[in-house]
Length: 471
Image (cartoon, rainbow, N blue to C red; front, side):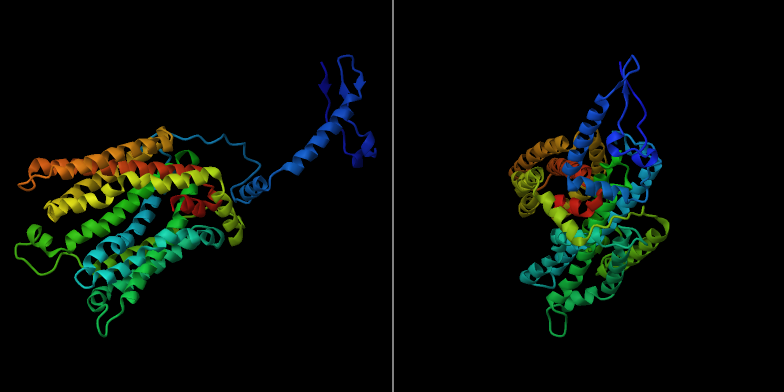
């Protein structure tokens, strides 16, 4: 059986021409075979063919990886990352800390979003017409259109601050300043908007449009950062952080804020003598969170170090990559699924609560239902993230989809059996149970599909990739 000798020296070293530099091959009798030269030429030819057929995309990905600060040829080749199925307290300490950071950043996004999409339109009913409130709803549009500028967030950044902190730090600072300015004037603006001497509805809407625009841009950067903050095996927890953080922030700024803003709630539960105002004002709430934004931004700037990268994809390059992703058949399929998936339970999400109020369920009972539902939504978000690691995310999504269809049927049944004599204890329990089950299936679907997006997204253009899939 033949054995192969060491590679011959290069022609420059031994002075022989290229034609005579052959790879010697010996057989068991010690005789040299000339087949080595033929085999070498064939291998060399095949190598040239392979070089010519290397895809540009593969070389681009390789170049991006090699430009990372942490890339080194001195380290051993790492094993292919596998998805872990352990709980949060079994995560590495670094992943636990980064998970907490993600929850905090997503929570901060939810604070102005809950105000702009929930509390403020509700409060405007006493000051504006329905047409003017319709104009105000334009303030929420940046969150739906953020895909158009997401490549800019991925491509433009300062190496001094880091790829994601280059956007998160100034955006949070601007958001904090905006909330401080608005907090000092918002209540007077609401009273005078559309009236003589006051701001126009477009000017009032513009300030909230600015806050939502900042939140939407920050969301692009945080989504991209989440792909690299957590280790590959625990990337599914990025969707859990998003669910817990955004839900808590929006709930605090919508349900909790309106409860403490209400004078009836304050007089019933916290005061012995009734007063004409609630425990909390919109201006004071905005001022508090404006300072909180600034404090968190300063702490993030000094205490958290981001891994530096030398990726140099330009804006137009990221747009082209995004267009290439859109042309993938699998991406087109999942886009189609996202477009039609909610048809079966859209009526339940948008109409069931309104029908219950029309039948006389009462806003106090509805507020109690939502308050009870909130801790379940937070806790189930954690378990949904854990389950998305034990099972494949899309399988979990399918289970949640079937459960959500069942919840829609149960909701219609709940409306039909509304007691003729008014709300009773057993009926209130049924509504709460149905609401919790519907929220549970909704949370499972959201966490599962977000975990799937995090697994397939390319961290090099993470913000754009995650925004494309989510939008």
